[in-house]
Image (tube, rainbow, N blue to C red):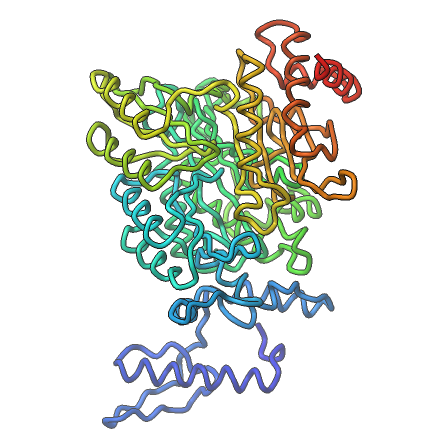
Length: 609
């Protein structure tokens, strides 16, 4: 930036800051990094040392790109959002001391500090709870058994004695008192679990295929790449200067989807056969690059026409994030996502800017030249399945709407260490996998899981039941989603037996953490007027999907009181079982060949039976 863009007071501040930094470094006998503001001068240090500042340059910081993006907004005559102003006043990465002080005083953050503290992984969730929620970063969804045990211990001592699995194959602790926030942060770091950037305007937990390395049908292992992406983010501080949150996923083309098409950046494994290879694109495995997924805003990641080798993925992702950092909306939070940059610019302009950031051209490959196998099994995340390794199995354990107690978590960790790999895998379906279980050990492990009060088998209803935290723990939610989801499942299981998988996604607000738009049945909370009262209820969508069944669910019913949802869904599913074309017709196929009016009529008719 030109010095003409700084006011006189800013110049004085920078001059003093760099001068002080030079003195501090000289005292420690370190090289001088700055001094452009005082070129030609010298700094006298105790002991007679003198530091010549003639040829040094002004320091640059990783935060500079975000600062310049903010300045461009101001120079254009627009106003920064409240959150951008808060980040200008105080770097959210430097709050460790403040958080520690508040813990000692047993007080929660106030005002803008509530937002800024999210960057450290602590969310003050009042008025839903007068407590913190702590979100972690579990790259690729894999953690060691000792880490799960340690997190369970922390939840018992400093939180609510339970652990939630999220739809990003991640973990959260809840009901953390004000004076326990630092205990959680210290404890997690001692376990090797990082929280930095798990909330706020950052890249969230990087997801991968849950069966990476053990899936007999995958094209490529994605877990190692997701972990490298995680460390890339942690060690490039400019990645923390985004206009809004950002999601990245790697899918290896195997049996359990990573839902890459719901992410800002999706990398999905594809194969270029020998017949379609050339010098620039040799035969082999690549990632199809997709951009702009945000299903809460009714959009999936779209194909860019670009293929990326596994070795290129991190560099390309970094360039994409930087272009978004520099050009994302910093005035309107509702439009501060990658999707809206793409909508405004178009893909070609955006990719051109990515190429400038990379310093090289991207690999454009016609869709006819590569193959993308579609072998997903919608029940592969639960029950017992053979691994690629002979004589080894994984067990998908059902966690009721993604929650396990501390004792259950410790029990699962012990089983993993005794009978498996000593590691566990989390999935975007809010459950957990134990891996590398020998054939002979399966009966004992299965019995032990049930002794913990959990199960590895589930109905076609419960296997795909997803719910966000809801009003019991989130200030944004309009209903108690986890409780209502369980009530719906229990009711429907009494009346129906489904022979095909049904995904029911229950979300509490427009943030759509449970991704209601991609469920076979998606419910989003709302307040419903019943007589003189306002009660919890839901808008009901149907026909959503991902992958080969990709689609945004269509609105079927509005303003349904929570206690009327289950009977209504009973009518809808009864109509499906009675009128589907064949037993092979999935629910999503059935509802998408019917009009909304037809579905409403069928549902109401069958609900009266």
